[in-house]
Length: 264
Image 1 (cartoon, rainbow, N blue to C red):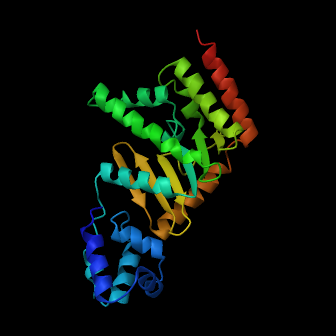
Image 2 (cartoon, rainbow, N blue to C red; image 1 turned 60 degrees about the vertical axis):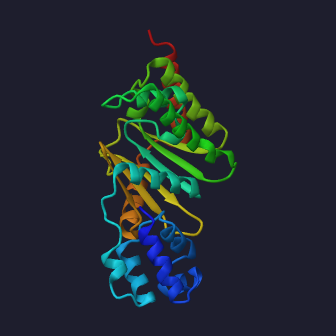
Image 3 (spheres, one colour; image 1 turned 45 degrees about the horizontal axis):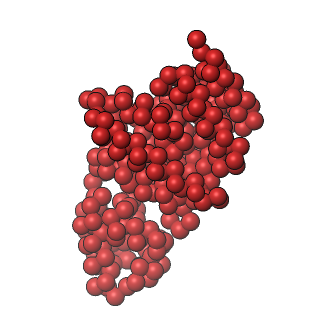
């Protein structure tokens, strides 16, 4: 989201003689959420924009001219990555590929090489570096709390070949053993699930509303509507209910990695 809307909100707030905290109290929002909107990092929901209009006596201007609902995929991805760095808790569901936060360098590079039109080696290097850099959030031993729910297909699809897959799976196993993430596998034997049509990242924050990022083929959507995020959280919980317990998931992952090690 560009900063024009955020700049205009800040100007209206200052003209009204309000601090961010005072506006947040009047609009029944958090100060941090106001700050993110003013900085251009968050798009206010329609309800947020309505409350801001009421608090600032701006009629329906903020509601009518809130940023469009269809930013580009690249813009949504950039916004989601920024939120990922701020999150206190992250739940991921992956139906086809290992989530970016958990990828090894060789796995990430193999994924990048599936792009069409193909990227240059320089572009692949840049994107792989960005993806690996996201894992710096694990430098803090406590936050964010990360849970990954993986369809078994994620383990069985040999992205990059058997050796790359064996290393990738054991990388995740070691992260679980270190207590840094929790992982559950949704086995092939489970029935159809409400999240199976795409990939979902749910994020919670210390001082702003939760958000969700959903990805499909050449599409993505960043949600901060309370109703949408709550529905996605419920779908995640229902899907998690049919997944293997963590120790069984780890046993399946170790066995699958061993199969790749001995692949002919």
